[in-house]
Amino acid sequence: MSCFLVSNNHISSIISTAASMLKSDSLAIYHDHERYVFNLRESDSIQSIGTILLDENYRSYVFRYPNEGKDILIEEDKPKFIHRPVMTLNPVSMLKALACYNYQACETNDYNETRACKIIKRFTSHAIQNLKGYDEAPWGID
Image: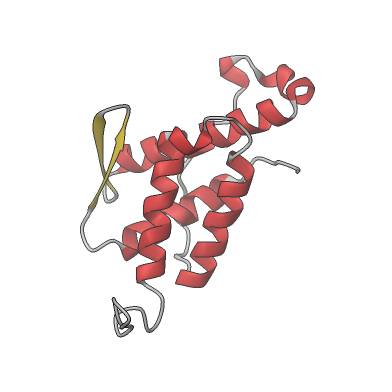
């Protein structure tokens, strides 16, 4: 399995698209018995989510390639998230971008318990709900 660092544009696209898909401005996740609430219309929240996602992707990369990552273990040398205005993605492109991120960030043994994973799962759920025909499809099937 290979791993690479996704771009700031990749993460910005995910966040911008999620903001356009959510029915409300806020996204809440639970992690380590704490509730985190992010307002996807506020730059501080966007920056926090982007940093969480990029840091987890970086952690995955260093875990997968310890010899290559050792040169950028110094905090000042780590990649930094910088949000950029980007176009929003359609639901299918969003799902693919989320799958790509998930694949690049999942190398560590505890990825499924991270804030990044929980954010990605919430974004994925919202992208699925925005697929054409989702609202008209039956909830239960008899």
